[in-house]
Length: 193
Image (cartoon, rainbow, N blue to C red; front, side, top):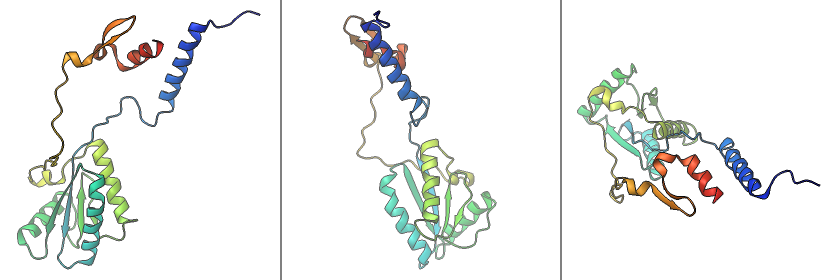
């Protein structure tokens, strides 16, 4: 009986099937942006408002899960400047500034009121996740509020990537510039070795 595939080629073919199969069933495309974007949420609330307190508690609860989330809150019942900011923001969004809490995230339609964490909270969290993953405009930029910069005191700045960082030395092949070779080709080469 004749061998159909020689042993050395069997490893290469198996590796290619595993690699391509893994890419085919990946939940994210290869070109997906893995960068997280700072996202600013504006909350207009009233001191003594029960629904506002529930939303503030909800935001405090989700804040640790989303370090990119920046919350700017404005008490509008007892602070005239904040009430004016709320009015300007509402006008910028063609929104009737009425009740509180009112929440502005990205370019989404503002959310008025707060039911529960499972209803209104889920909607807010979906908007936040979308903006963190895809990037959204800061709602305050429509009325001239300077964008907020997220505070990350425990995170040192990333060192720049130098050409030496992109070079790998492989047995039998020698030195390869990973930046020029591409991740897919580099993975196949490493798998073959």
